[in-house]
Image (cartoon, rainbow, N blue to C red; front, side):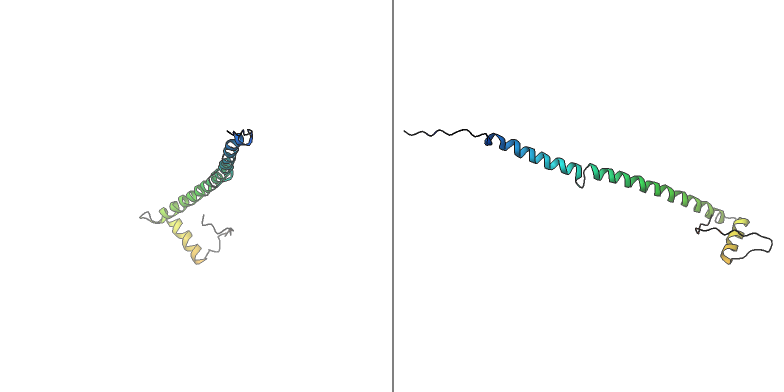
Length: 108
């Protein structure tokens, strides 16, 4: 009877840990750099902060416009507001008035 003796190799012991290490490295890399990773989360939070700032500025502009419109639509017209809007749209001024031109196109 012939028996064969196999020499034990150390490579067999390293295959499973090597594959596990590669899989963990792959998922670790994508957890940090992927589309839903930590860096993407930081970029998203920065964008949210920027857009919330813009939203607050737009809300303030809307409040100002609503306040001006409420002066015109309150059921009774305020004479100063009506006079101001008429002069602006007709581009008229009296001789004794001083006109100050502002840049930026704001109606405030």
